[in-house]
Length: 123
Image (cartoon, rainbow, N blue to C red; front, side, top):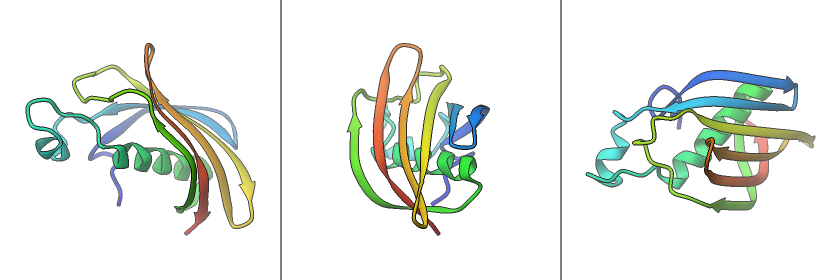
């Protein structure tokens, strides 16, 4: 699955080093997924939030990744496309055999939406 430029677009990348970055993204309100999730009151599906984290981790690492294990995934608030504010996807990675340990959050200036900890292996 590839959802960049369908579900979200990257506005900016603030890279602190090779293992850490904050991706500033904008949700694409015209994405067809919102027609079914839920019409009239759309929310961002959790699987799309996780895929957004994975795609940002791929960009940071420069490698194709596959999620191999999830240690923690908490959805702390509903993320909606009506919120046209820029969303931050903070990615912290550490190397492991054949992949990365990834810690990530999705938030904006006033809310945290997702907290993720898991392993991603090189595809």
